Amino acid sequence: MKNLYFILLLSFISFNCQKELTAPESLLPTITTATPTSITNTTALSGGNITDDGGAAITARGVCWALTPNPVATGNHTTDGTGIGIFASSITGLTANTTYHVRAYATNSTGTAYGADSSFTTTNSTTALPTVTTLQITGMSLATASGGGTVTADGGATVTARGVCWSTTANPIATGNHTTDGTGTGSFISAITGLTGSTTYHVRAYATNSVGTAYGGDSVFTTTTTAGLPTVTTASISAITALTASGGGTVITDGGATVTVRGLCWATTANPVATGNHTTDGSGIGTFAGFMTGLTAGTTYHVRAYATNSVGTAYGGDSVFTTTAAGAPDVYVAGYESSGTGDFAKLWKNGVPTNLTGGTNEAEARSVFVSGTDVYVAGYEKNGTPDVAKLWKNGVVTNIAVGACSGANASGVFVSGSDVYISGSVDDCTNDIPTVWKNGVATSLSGASFAAAANSVFVSGTDFYVSGQTNAGAGSFAKIWKNGVAIDLTNGVFGADAFSVYVSGTDVYVAGYEYNGSKYVAKLWKNGVATSLTNGTNDAIGYSVFVSGTDVYVGGSESNGTVNVAKIWKNGVASSLTNGTNEAAVISVFVFGTDVYAAGGEFNGTKFVAKIWKNGAVTSLTNGLNDAGAYSIFVK
Image 1 (cartoon, rainbow, N blue to C red):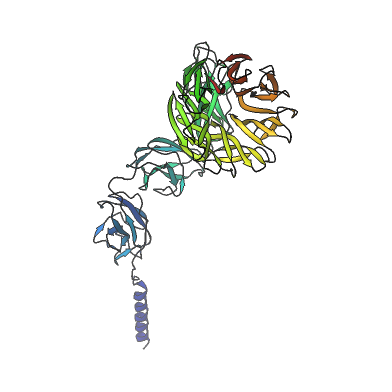
Image 2 (image 1 turned 180 degrees about the vertical axis):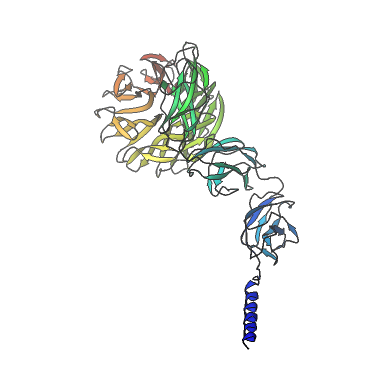
């Protein structure tokens, strides 16, 4: 009996052990379908994410597609590896302008599971995704890196956005961390920021057109464990004269520590350093412009951009240029002269006039800017009833805008690299809308509930500044707009206007006026803080501001109780350019080397005469037989 019990016990244990060792039955995988992207006329991208293999190895995965819902993997499909996780699939051989259904699939020993059905429509055959490549990642630091890409083709539709995107997983997309680095085809540089030290990242260049977003290859890099030097490049040198030159640079990465100062340094020997001759042009990453002064005529210089953080100072490449030989600079003046029946918009070069219009209609040239060998003039001409805002480049006219009712005007022009900025206003038959145009594309400026005006424009690095005024019912606000965002300089209780803006380093200077209840007071604002140039006893206006080194010049006029006197204020100290017998005003001021130039006009008893002053010595641009005025001066 005892042996029989033992045998039965062993049988019971054996039976239960066999049940415990039996493998559980496997299930179908769990999978989701990725939304189709990068859709062209014949291709698209999709994929999936297998989050559970169902207890059996995934032997095949991919996407399948058809013209009807819920396609299966026995039809059109891709094969994209094995195992769980995220995968990407390239769908090819599609027909243009056709709607397809796509599902991700995953197969294990139990069978095939599918993600949700997702539909998309291919594009027509005339457009496609852009073609873009990813540049090699450089300048890795604790928190930053430098990347970029090249858009080699736009796919037949304009590329409206481009940049790089990154993540800690493969094939990042532009809806996540990304930069925005311009539009169109060509190469671009991207600053990748906000990274974590000692971390591996994936980065792809992207380009978007009306079809969708295309990506370059996936590039992998790892950030450093400690901060390093910034990465900086030196821009080409331009606007070279006997005594000055313009340059700049781009701080691509900060090395993982804040860039506290940046600028240009120069010397007559190679690889200059920032402890010698240098500019200070702000802080942080990004593009900046620098202006070198105090140079010697006919001399070869070396220049480098620099950027300093807590680790030290980094430099861009050494760029070489030669100042021009000593000699008189060219003086350009924009203005007008009456023809008797209309006006000639005019440009004077060294006193020699060129008519920009035919003299039949009312017209004015309001601003002049010289870049390289090109001369840009902004102004307007009346076309029947409305005014037409115009830009002349080397005498060839382009219509910028034709507003409704009274029309449009262009009051200022500034050229930065290949970009042309114009300030002005457009009448919508209710108000004049302050407007800035960049390469002909208009942006209406904010903060204008009533009639308003944009008087001048200045570009510093990637920032553009516009000065002007908006009415506020009984009073008006003197204003500037930085990158389209309005900043009030006055409280709007009385009348005020900002006629001119100039940026030097990180300082923003504005010239204009504010009414004090009985008189107009000439004003200079520095970074929004006002200084009165006159005491308010007589009317006065500041029309123009120019900064040279540490000196600030304002051109304008002040009444002597009978007529307005043309004046220049240097660091707040006034100098009269006219004797106070006839009406006169300085409308524009420009400093070249040690010489101070001014443009404006003076009444001769019967007509206004266009005039310029150099260090106080006057030259008449017109003969006084017809009314004329000089609104803008540029010396190069």
